[in-house]
Length: 387
Image (tube, rainbow, N blue to C red; front, side, top):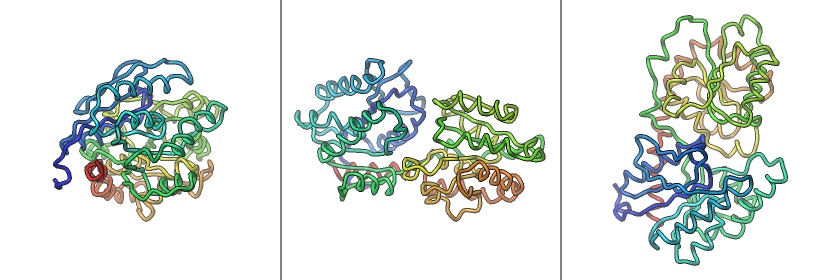
């Protein structure tokens, strides 16, 4: 342990959402564990939807707050309740981690002497379609970052592409920051003998897990399976794990294209069940299209597929290329059309033996570069130096 880590801190990490319904809990839980192992006292402050979620196997302290569960009001009331708690229950030396949407409470924190504020930016706003989306973007992205970003003493980003995108949008320059990407717990996600047991050697299972929405490209995989020649389609199935606003539409799409028998919807499963689902797959798919929010991201699912030693079909967006550009266990689509996915699926099936052999390197690559411990130490060292 480096000398900068000797002085341990109480860290309050503010979430502006319903934590129990959050599909991406891993960064919060895994990075909190790393900080705790460094000797810090870490709490996540959040709201909840149906019930208070207390993760098994993690030492992080979960503090939940009530909020008005009404459209357009939930986040504001949640942040107000969290702000009141922080003003009464934190010392001046405590570190408070905020996201851009939570940055609106920073002026009040500073007014009452809470100066150890860290700004953590993980993405740019997505799904800007309705008037409400545009209002939300202004209230919780444009205004906070334009007027309150300098109230934070430290900054972090998920990728350097995201940092550059934020700098360009707001015409600013961040000289003091740390990058910590998404990662994977390679003790939970690792190759398994289950992956080698198959009743039918011609059976080929594609797999996707995560949030389900129209803008994530999953529908094009379903349509691509419908376009497959029967000699491929009779052997190929597609397992989808997850939930989201696009789930009903995806099921309708499968029905409309006559491939409901080839698509298996497993619903939202506990995170601890995901490794087993990946092990049973032959090839994993991350079909994210070329959009600003995905181009600057660091997709967790790709690291989890890698850690389990699985070949992948990926779109050639920057976030994917930055990780796996030259790896031969990856099948790249030429673009993001249905035909692009159909050709990639056919190639993956025809070369399944060689892809399986080459993908054994994927788990080692994930362990060396993308384990949560690697990313967490970067963040922990920065916080220790800064605060």
